[in-house]
Length: 334
Image (cartoon, rainbow, N blue to C red; front, top):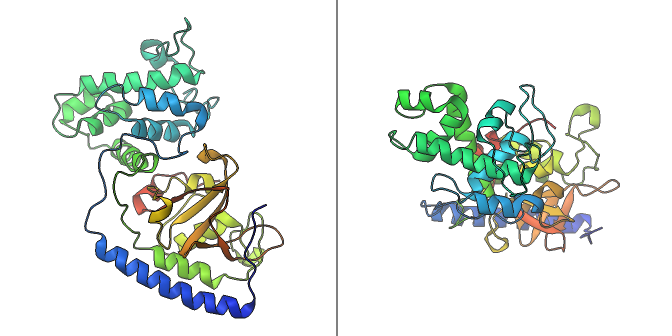
């Protein structure tokens, strides 16, 4: 268990005043600085965003051609399978890269050089996904517009439709697929510059502050039948939903709701995450809302109440600056 910060009623009142001033001050400063300095090429992976078992594969094969990068490849794999190497879709797409057997027969490669092409083996499937992306990029290389967007559209709708349309075709499913992957790419990429602040952060904090002192409930979403109680990810989900952003239910999916500022770049409203495995975001087990000064508001555990806790503990994993596009790209079911 992490050490906790236990405060009395008077200290909580003082803390609230301090936090509100801190939130307003930091948020206003951040807003004044948000002149578009963020962005840049997404070429390396954010810490722990890819499970350790697959990180080297994604990092290597994500640089197979100029149309892809490791963060983009990671976004596709997460979107396709959630990193589950055994999943089968209703359309019989199989494995971590969700190849249909017919597509695998034509485009699967022996990524690990062991003499076979195994659709279930990530050492073959991840290289095959990268190889297939690059093959599609070659098909659409002369199509106007962004080559990566056209490649993703070809992955979803077929290269012929992209060529015929002269870019991403006017198919809502395809346009949405391209937007989702490009949004998720920012979550899997290590930031190359300052990450812009969230406009909804102050509102999310204000919501969480109103819940201070509320008893914890495992699986709690704050509904009336649950007595208005929350668990950790239920609180963060409700806080951001109060400002119009719908997050997934579980903490390890919430990690992918935006880019990842470093510890020294945290702003109030950032989600902060904790794990016993600091190499794998899928192992995240706790989340809180950063309020500044090294503290968060969180729903810690059974028997405790929503409160302020320190974030600088050995199990601190990292942070996410929630964005609307990042959240929309994520699954919203448990």
